Amino acid sequence: MLVVVMPSPVYFTGAQAFAAVLGTTPRMVAASLTAYLMSSMIDVEIYAAWKERVGRYLIKMAVTFLSLPLIYATKYVHDGPDSP
Image 1 (cartoon, rainbow, N blue to C red):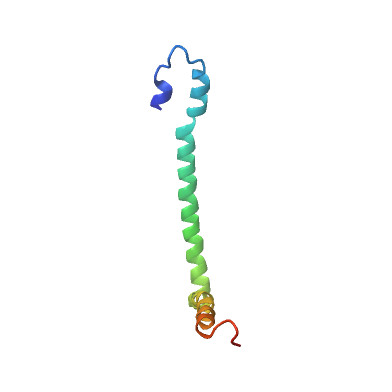
Image 2: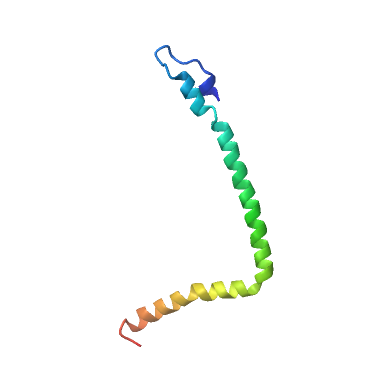
């Protein structure tokens, strides 16, 4: 990193601590990107296996699960809160 390599001013006494803290930044960024890519790949593989196993049933179930609150909300707005 350029900030760690550049010379510090004479009045600054924490150059070694500054280098110790910021010196590991590239390694942390590389590790977090690697972890993100690995977890994305694993997630895709698990989703593909799950979708193959469950099949179209999951899609039907998701549509039903998402549409039921909309149906009841529409009925509530149209008929009012006191209707059966």
